[in-house]
Length: 268
Ligand code: HEC
Ligand code: HEC
Image (cartoon, rainbow, N blue to C red; front, side, top):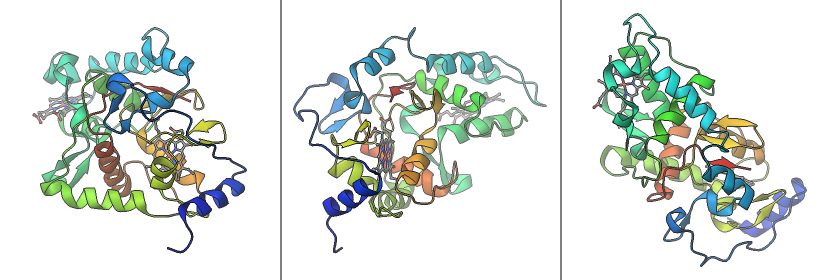
């Protein structure tokens, strides 16, 4: 308690030599499928040129990653002599799969995100090596699988076995951290629509991930984004696929419930 969020933000502003300007967009603007009640995709905060890139499959550079995934889908690898296609047939069998990740897995007593589910098929079903986080293979396949659910509303579970993970993710989201002493919610809820350096602060939704980021000149996972946001406030980033980020992923996906899968979205 003590300091108000705005004072903290101001402190953060000074430290980052950043500035928050007022709300850049009218809250009542209608964004079609990209807005559900008060929940808005990062698409609605993006510059018109960036949105145009995302809208056109031929211009969207993220589609190159989908093509990598498409090729790997047919590729036989591992001691079992199988490809994804040997068991799953066409990629259309993946339609609708992405909307409910991360999912609870009883054998692990833990959540599993789509990257980890894909890798479990590699190790257990193909007897192949798992792909590394942020490799072009794992990003490519994740983009490809999520892209089969393009436009479908996100719908993760948060009750039953999910409840403790949801609570953990929510607590992480609200926890002040780092030298700037800011929580996710300060930037993405309290200052939504404000400006931080070159960026308009969005609601920090996860529905477009993995995204093609102009700044990265490439595609990156949601956990890469979490790490970047943790580092922005000078706090410790957690590992790719860590329990902390899995719980946070569940909470972030729940925040965006009903928003469409946009993978591969294009962002600044
Ligand atoms: C030897 C057969 C086999 C191979 C090869 C295989 N899988 Fe699977 N996969 C399965 C089975 C079985 C399931 C569990 C089905 C279920 O949960 O209904 C599964 C589940 C999945 C799921 C979760 C689906 C859901 O509804 O949540 C994804 C995603 C997936 N596989 C992707 C892949 C990818 C990508 C590859 C290639 C890298 C691959 N699989 C290779 C057998 C296989
Ligand atoms: C100091 C302010 C700040 C804090 C604190 C912060 N972020 Fe961010 N975040 C940003 C900025 C700036 C961007 C890029 C512009 C945007 O989409 O808001 C961003 C982007 C994102 C995005 C991508 C949204 C999209 O549509 O591409 C996600 C997801 C995200 N943040 C999640 C988080 C989470 C989870 C936390 C807490 C661990 C967090 N952020 C903490 C500033 C912050």
